[in-house]
Image 1 (spheres, rainbow, N blue to C red):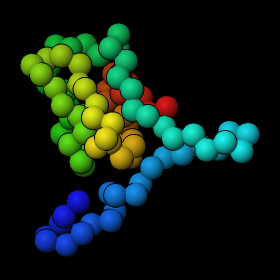
Image 2 (image 1 turned 120 degrees about the vertical axis):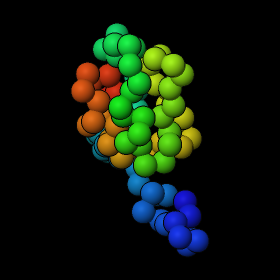
Image 3 (image 1 turned 90 degrees about the horizontal axis):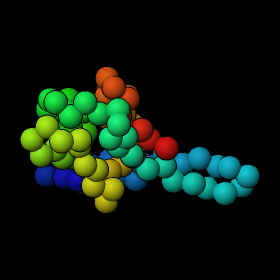
Image 4 (image 1 turned 135 degrees about the vertical axis):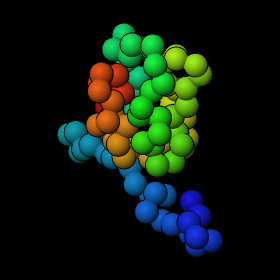
Length: 86
């Protein structure tokens, strides 16, 4: 990511991992459709620092896992807990 014309490494190599029985497991962001009311613009979309969440009309947000840095900001911000980092 470029910020002020310089490479910003803050967002490039941040991944949340869990070690279970010696195995490293990368977490993914999931949308739980049943928890999302889908009757408003998703407030968590604007919280994502890399633009990995998108929304069409009032549908549940979609996650671009190639962009997602698994920072957890959107899942912490979602009032319905429909975005889950697991």
